[in-house]
Length: 111
Length: 113
Image (cartoon, rainbow over the protein chains, first blue to last red):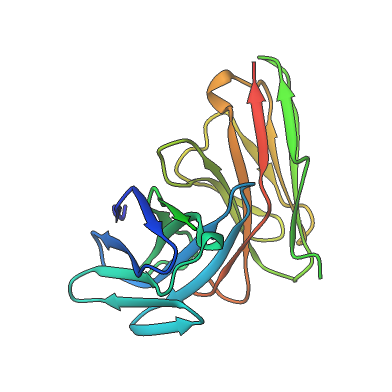
């Protein structure tokens, strides 16, 4: 079983600040997902990556496979970024697609 | 495309009652999953299915049963609800192979009194 740890658990920021959320995992993986969950509960996929870096608008996700670590960055944060951000990993060699999830990081951005 | 839908959105049960949660996807996905989300914990896998007519146990299957009679539907049943099953339940499906993005339903908030 892959142990997925996220930090911090809670994060408060002022609008415009640069945000970093970290994720580490214990066992080799084939893919890592960053998910966003808004109040009201729906979960959407932000990124799926297995190496390097991906960028979508103000969001950037990076992964270091050797260090078993990933970061999610938000540039120029905005109150609408307030949500829970969840890291999830798929074990290398798994043919079932099942994910192991971190506990999430609650981000609040104040105007 | 409606994506992944879940029925109902909210439900309150009394201990010992039974109910079925329905997950439906219109994307022709093979793989489908049921998760539960509890405060302070990551999502945990209850049951999953890798195709029509197949189901398997996940991390926390006790007290639940599932069926996948049609490819587009994945049903989660609680035969005798317990307060420990109070949770938010999410269904998800995967496009193509197991290495691809998961699409989540909107969730079902279940309270067992």
